[in-house]
Amino acid sequence: MNRSQFLAVMTAMLMSVAAVVPTQAAVVQAEGVWYELDEQRHTATVTCNDALRREGQPTYSEAVAITIPATINLPAANSPKPAAYKVTAVGDYAFYGAQVTAVHLPEGVTDIGIVAFADCQNLETVSIPNTVTRIGEMAFARCGRLQSARIPDKVKTIEPQLFYECAGMSEVTIGKSVTRIGDGAFAGCGALQTVTLPDGVTQIGLQAFKGCTALKHIGLGKKLQRMDEGIFLNCTALEEVTLPQSVQMMAEEMFRGCSSLRQVVMPANIQRVPIMTFADCVHLKQVTLGKKVTQIGDSAFVRCIRLEAFVIPKPVATIGAGAFKQCKAIRNMEIAETVTSIGDEAFAECKSLTAILFLTKTPPALGKDVFRNTAGKGNYQYINVPCGAGGRYKSAWQPNKGAVRELCE
Image (cartoon, rainbow, N blue to C red; front, side, top):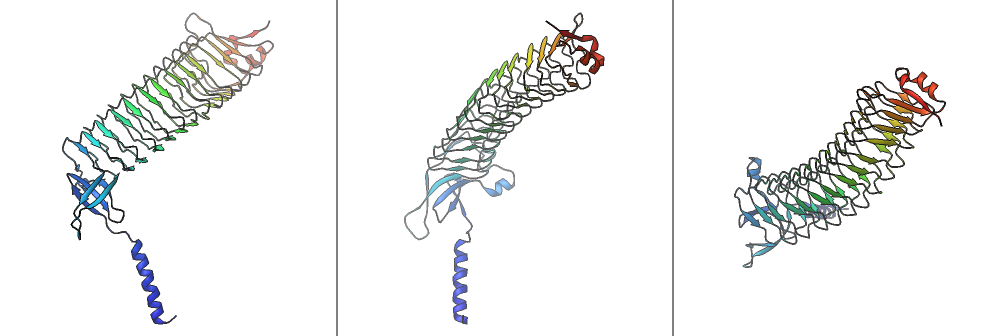
């Protein structure tokens, strides 16, 4: 290759690189709204005044309603005709902290960025067009006056903390294409009363509905498989939940503090009741365990003070520490022959518990103070065991041997 050929090749390479190097986008203001322009695609993204944002000031400081046009027309450099730019997105932080009361987005917008409307304390209504396919994390977080929201059918994921602490939002409609609810998506939505998830939802994230204190009904989709920790933590108005049979596992603290919850039916495939799943469900009276449950976790039912009777079925093998502690209304307990281990204080302070039936002839291993302060004053706690097993129980459970009695026909 001679010198002229080499220079020609290098020139071509430099020109190709230059063609893909992005140019700095122009930011303009039109009718009070800031836009970032894409000159190649002739599209516009609603944005903020970056200088004001760096100073911690909102771009839109007036309490007004804003309508974003589908197209903005701007003067063209070399043409008497204006240049048209199609509005396709709302950028990250675009309206962060703004004082706007309402925002109307046009058809054609496909993307709403992260934190786009967060901390808009005066925002009451926002129209999200059907063309939107993505709404970023915390896009509407802490919009305390937002009354309702609609997730379009093309959106597949409700991102984490999307409506976090939207305390005034009483209604939400979720599009049919959503498959995942992100962590904390609706946490702190204290006015939200009813939610129906589409059948395509397979996962609900960490503390997704935590602190939704007005939530009375939740409709779970038929394909739901995974439910993460604390999903309904402190949902104090929730009364009844039916978990679909598709659910494969439950997580810790899932219903903790649901003080109005009265009944739960578990799916057949659940193998474990995790730590503090139903802790402080003070109105819970009935729980039906699935046929595959092998473990009841620590403090799983602690302080369920209205739980009156409980059957621990096969194939449960382990009852965790404090699992039924302070369940003051339980009078009778039946424990399957598969149980081999009972943790510390599992039944401590169950003051109404007067009879426990063990179906196994082999005494389960006991932790410390398993039966401490059970059976109230004037009652006597009986540990009923199979005929011929009394000696083994008394030998293994020395501190409780006086309560052991054999049941022989």
